[in-house]
Length: 482
Image 1: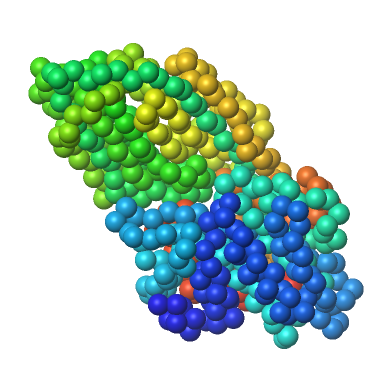
Image 2 (image 1 turned 45 degrees about the vertical axis):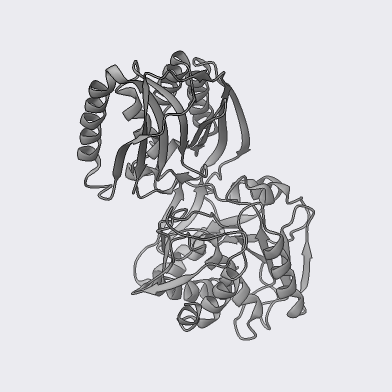
């Protein structure tokens, strides 16, 4: 499978991507990929080092004639989101990604592909390895843990980089040039409960929500896709006075819209017909609402071996009400930039089991005040249900610089090459530029990359033709830096 990918054009990029995808690199488990990158830099006899948090920096002198140009920092992140289909047998900690070619797309076999941000990393590797591509002095910055906290960017100390311009290769539309992004904060609501015995007069049901598209909780939040946790809770709410929750397992990563959720509930046998009827009626409504955007949505209810323990009725009810009250999806559109989501929240993961409840959210906003507003709204909803709420992993947005020299140069170059204007925009995702700008406030930054679809989901795919377009554009940008 990887051989077919290696034969794609541009070979220098796809071969590096195949090399990269052979190395397991989940977020927070980047030891192997860090060593891989160190070996790569040292084999090229380039200055290579790892900073105290694990970021890899490789420096390359300018090619002849470009020594007097401003130093460029090429930046991408090493880690990838690890998501797979339930029926896919795969271990992200030990296996390399199994890639497939499907028309103009490279995909993976039931897992995320890692094009986010592996194609950016591969392109930088190809530049570093080339003896023919013209470029100014380069500092390649490969950050760690972008997907689950941006701790690599946060830990990069001032003074390590000497560059003037930063090219972040982590945008997912090849006609976009990014000049701003959203900040974010992780919101976690927790609660303990005392389990109660389930009466012999109760029966249990297993409810499954699956088949949703999922996707990136920032870039895809505007699409109105189904959130498995909210759909599951909506079903629970139809019989809130009759059901007792035993377990809930929904979603996985904060930055992925949840595709699947499973719950175990019990009901009094006397209420069985009424509750199942209510469930089926609501499921019919949900499927009708989502039929155009989530055609593969499946919701199944089946009898289940009755558990010995469950939540008490009050805890079940308050949990359902808290999830219902907690905002999910777009909270506010930007009044300044057309079609840009300003503030949103993703109810990413819900776990109820063995006396513990944990609800994990990721709130994003391009305005710090907007981020705080929605975070406080969520905190209030959960605290009314007696949850303990904590904020963590907070990172700033990247405020657009309307006087950016590199934005002006690159946008004109794009128009000259392609005969049309690029979309100069901010994105509703957490790029590392905002964080890097704190310790390097004079860096002139932009972001661009090849077209990628379905990032953070097993449907992730990268366009082959777009990767060629991106590669040619990147080489032209390096030749034309100020």
